[in-house]
Length: 249
Image 1 (tube, rainbow, N blue to C red):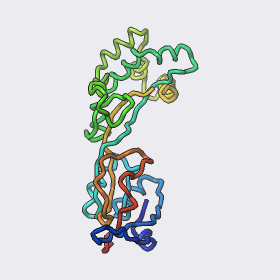
Image 2 (image 1 turned 45 degrees about the vertical axis):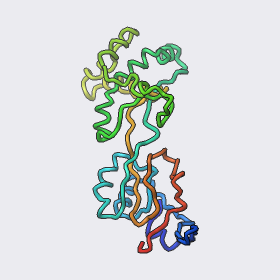
Image 3 (image 1 turned 90 degrees about the vertical axis):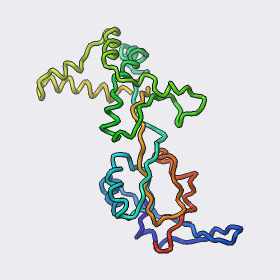
Image 4 (image 1 turned 90 degrees about the horizontal axis):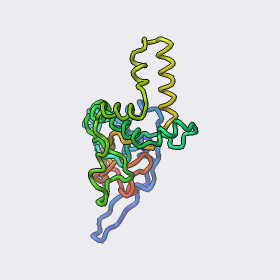
């Protein structure tokens, strides 16, 4: 994470010459300071101490970043992501009975329509996301049927319950809800629910939402990004080597 105070004295300026005779100073060296704690990272951003940041900055931090951008001299770009959170089930589970359930597509369809993606979008992503199915491509290429993007994403808990009952399953969730809070029964059922959730992972799409990119206004020749692309995709093909700092920086 480049910092203005630490970075500026160590920058070496070179010139990129065009046929018109113009010269553009670009940054040939970048020093990064890593801040692993998210609160410290966000505080550093809103203090205007960062020239550019995308990696490890997610949508929940957008409100405070937007609130301080004018005062601290940076610009926030909210761009669609390429990836999205997903979850799934272990189709090769060592327990044969569990593997049979997870391998049944009717079970997985029931699990998909049991997700209230609209509420998830409003609560977690400020309504900026879009309910999506997972089909292996992002962005969506022209050869993909657009209907696949919404396949089994409708919220239908009754259909999910009926499908699970048809498979011979009972609502353990109901038993958990009816148990006395703090009782041994709650702890035992909750422990099993947590263990099953953690251990049994095939992908089911949830919500795809934008994430923020922070660019300090003194950093020049930075184009408008089209996507917030992965944690380690970095800036290419946006040519970070051709950015430069303003003369009054």
